Length: 418
Image (cartoon, rainbow, N blue to C red; front, side, top):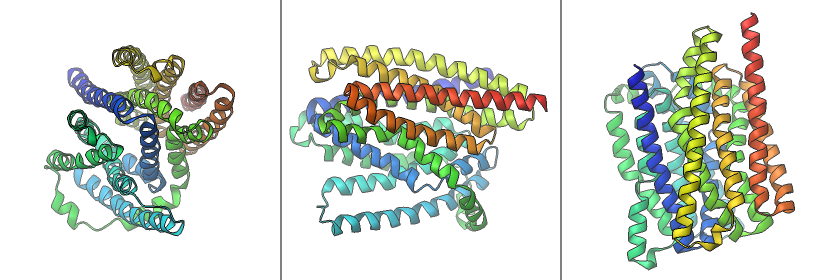
């Protein structure tokens, strides 16, 4: 069993590391061959593509994941189908409203806008499927899907862009991203080939579950919005205070550091979800403590080692590729890497709160985090320029990690006394 667990962890790490490397390549390609302004536009678009799924997610993925842990594929499939119905209706509503607002305000609808809209649809569906796969202990399959939709197309794009300079545009970046969903869908159907799809398709929509969860999900919804805001809102503040070019520089380093956090989250933290839930549901707080301690040490060690590797690798590439506009921002890079390492550990503590079913503390901590992050970012950007974004990210990460640690220790001690 220990060998199987290690193999699963290493497989997930390998998939996410490959995604990390290719995403590195995409960031370098955009800055080197398309420009810093294009990098800034890419960062702002990525923020919208990432924030919208949470905005129209209504906090349901949190409950879907919790409900289907340890359940049969048929049960999980029907619940996901119900969830995706609401997703489709929400996407239709947002798309119509968004396009209507753009037309009413006289905003020209360009190819970039339409490509971003398509990606919003695809990424929203992808997120709604990814989390249930993790909850069903199909982490390797989930990460393979992430690799296909997020990374495998990058070397193809770069190769074609190097041969055909006319294709070095942000529009082609988005177009290749969209095309990647063709093999992604085939892979997903293959991974779920043993699921009873006919029974799932014939099963009725779980309207009662949907209504009951929507009544209770408002706090989780605020929390989800806070989490994505915590990750993406600062780039809009950078753009407002410092302009699009410096936003491009910030987005470049954010892409590197966020890839690190995503790698740890997917390869370690998400694998801890069923482990911590099962440990807590066993009724033994001692068992939960052991599981949490083991997972936290693993997260801290791996994120630190990978952070060092990311720094060395990126600095070497900046030097080799002679990217002088970026090589002068070492302080920002180090601050953002430290913040990513701390956030990776903090993400695990968040899983600990959800495993204890402390929904209110989970949500309020996330809400406080986005308020703190935006406030610090605005103040410190004005005081220290672009480095202020890194300082704000690190201070926010340390503060939120401390708060989550305090809650978990207090709850664990209270349960031991009862």
